[in-house]
Image 1 (cartoon, one colour):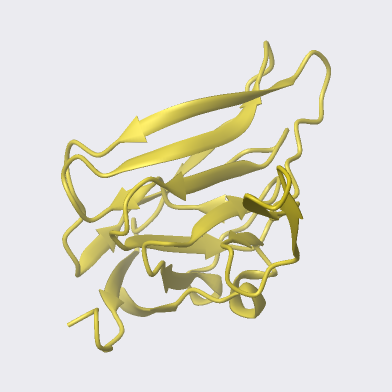
Image 2 (tube, one colour):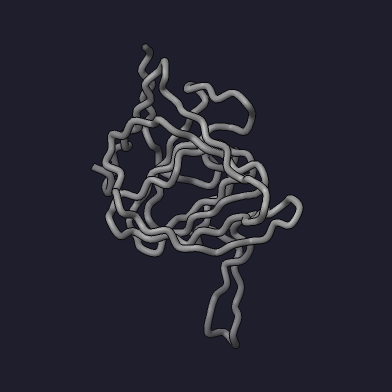
Length: 175
């Protein structure tokens, strides 16, 4: 059995671009609205709800069992009919593990990130990812994804022959 260790690096637009969009105000296009009382950070993610009879759904997810790194990755999923976005409602970091779209998932292709807590993410359609990994009980996220009559979640078990561990990078706010 081989062991793969992923070090979750800080989430950046460039680093996450092959998998989706980083949703954050910092560095985003913005303009004044509401007679100058507000700034709108516009079009931060490419929401995709393709497929017959699909529509966008907005939900809230709340963490009941926090992820404590290092964590063993055993399940990965993808959404073949639409994107899936998570925007934190608090400033607590969360972990992200992704793999490129396709049928095969090689442990060597997995990549891990950690949000700074002010950043959200939008997985592009078909991108493999680990289910949401919040690090604090009660941590909440706005979820924007596709709903409709067609199945939009494929799951795969990982680690039957390999062990995949995710650890945090070192940094001022990350141990």
